[in-house]
Length: 588
Image (cartoon, rainbow, N blue to C red; front, side):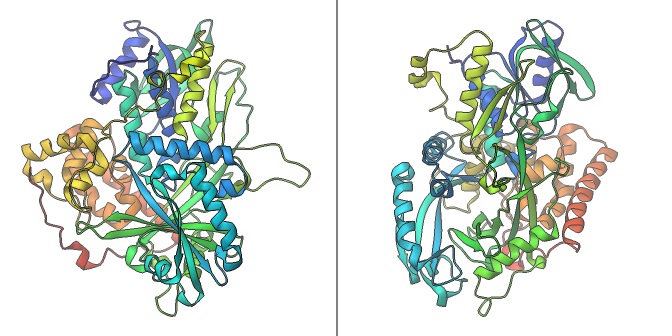
C-alpha cells in the first residue's frame, strides 16, 4: 500500500546522512531502491517509490537540480511544435501532466500566455499560414489545452502590439494568444525532493556515488558522504543522472543501450525595459527557420517585471558535461534573432553590454535509428522517455521533458516493482490514491490575497504553505527582513532558511538555485555574495578562511563564465529608479 503517514520531515543533511550510515552498518533495513541523481526525474522517482511504501534513498553528487533541471526554459507545457510534428500522444500526455502540476504545486506553477505574432513577412507565421495555425491551436486546445481554463484567441494588430510594443508595427498584422504554464524549475525539483522526504525517503545532496557492486540479492552502493566512504545495501538501483547516464554502472556492466545525445540549450537575460513584453512571445530565427521564446521574468519590489529571458538554442554538444559553456556564437545567435524581431528604428538594438545573465543546460535526448537521409538534428529527436535495464539490473530512466517528470517516474517505479517481484496489477493503476496523480507537493497552497510584487506574494510563490517558517525567522531576528541586495525581492531570511531547511551548503546553492539571483543579474549576485556568506557562516560554522573561500570560489566561477564566454566586463546594474525599495525591511 502507498505510504499514508505523511509529515513535514525535517529536511536536514545530518539526519539524512545518519540514516545512510545506519543502513550501511546494519542498524537500519536495506533500501528497496536507491535513486542516483536528484534532478527533477530522480526526485520524482524517489517520491513515487516512497509513496508506494518502498524504503527509498535519493542521492546527488552536487546539489538538487544542479544540472539540467535548473537550466531549462522553465516551461510547463504541452509543446505546440510537437503537435505540428504530428506527435499528438506526447502533447496530450504533457498537457494532462501540466494540469496536474498546476494543481499539485500551485505556488510554483503559473499560467503563462504566449503570443504568436502574425507578420506580413519575416515572422514565425505569415498571413497566408494564419488559418493553418488557427486550426493547429484549436487542436492544441482540444488535445488538452482547455484544461487551463482558457482557449486561444486571435488578436488584431493593435492587440498584438499592446503585448509586444517594441516589434516592427508596420509588419504586424495580428497574432494568436494561447495559454501554457511556467515554473521555477530548481524550486520545483526541490519541492519534489522535500515531498519524497515527507513520505519517508532518505534524501541527500553532496553525496557522490563511488562504486556500484552487484550481489546476489541486490547491490552495494559506495557513497562519499562529506569525505567518508559509506557502502549501503539496496535491492534496486535507478540511474536518473540524465546526460551522465553512461557514467553509472558496475565494473563489469555495460552502459545503457539507448543512446543519449546531449543537446545544448542557451538562454540570455536582459532588462525588461529593452523588450517590454507582458506575455511570452515566440519570435523567428531567420537563419535556420527555428523560433525562440521571449519570456518576461521576475519582479522588482514595485511589482513591475524585472527581466526578459530569451532562448533556447538547440545544438549538438560533445564537450564536457559539467557546466557546458555559452559561446560567442550562441550569444550572437540569440541576440540576432531578438534584434530582428525589434523595430530598431524606434528602439535601440540589444547588445552584449545589455546581457545581465546567461545560462546553459544539456537536454538528455534519446537518439533513434535514422534512415538513409542521415542524422537528425537535435530539434528532431524525441522528447519521449525510455527505460533501460542493464545486464547487471541497473534501471536507467532516459530522456523526457520537465513537464512529464511524474509520468516518467511512475513508469520507472513500475519497472522497479517488477524487479523486486512485486508487480502491480493493471487495475491498481485505476486507484488514484495509489498514485502521485493528485499528490500535493511540499508547500502547495492557495495564493494569498496580496498583489504581485509584494513581499507576501514573493514568499508564497517560493515557499507556499511554508512561508510562515520564513516569517518566523524574521520575527526572531528583525534584521533578516532586510533585502539581500538592493532592487530585488529576496530577503536575508531566505538564505538562513535555505541552509536550515533546504540543504544549501554553498553560495552557489543559494544564489543560483534557492534564489535565482545569478540567473537574473550576475552583478547583483556578486554584490549579494558577502552578505549571504556572512549569514551562511553563522549557520554552518564557517571560519573566516572558509567564508572567504566561498566568496572567492563564487566570484571566480562567475568571472570565468562571463569573461571566457562574452570576452568583456560584467553588465551594468539595474537602473537606479529600480533600487527605491532597497532599504525596505519586512516585519512580521
